[in-house]
Image (cartoon, rainbow, N blue to C red):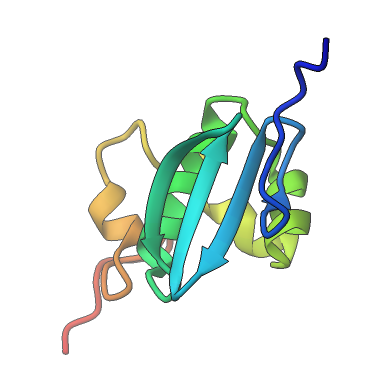
Length: 106
């Protein structure tokens, strides 16, 4: 009996149990055959937040996320470990602070 998750042909595998699909400007993530999370394709903060959770929970490695999403590994590394200290807003917000200093004033 085949128990491997079967993803739609339009999905890109992250691991043998995780995949994502870009359709009509929305990125959908699947765990097994069930949808797990969705965000708009241009929503970088949601992408960083969800992929960080996958890495922090051990569902995917930084390298797997980098390869599957086609982003450099260095862009995946800084987003890990940001969820447990309560500063998700500043770290995931496009106009928030960064690891080196406070938010920029506009």
